[in-house]
Image (spheres, rainbow, N blue to C red):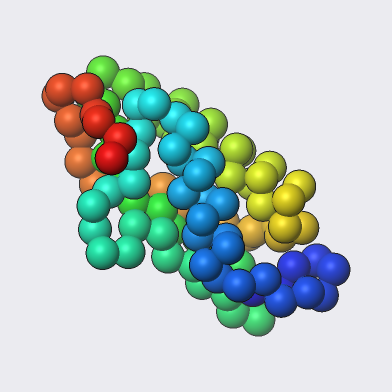
Length: 101
């Protein structure tokens, strides 16, 4: 993905930054799907899809908005990448407390 400075940033670096940012939220974890983070970089749009599991009794819109802001901030500040869209899909809701593994 090309950042705002014109430098090509490897997709793996972006995925790691996103995973680290999601890991900061104790009530959410990346789902155990094969690819919980999908990056699309076309000429017109830069988007990220993130699939998560969330604890029960959490206000989903609030937590996902917080995650979106945190990811946008990290990518902009550290990698100089501004995304058009950060989409979060809640794949599962866990009644017990999630264990980050």
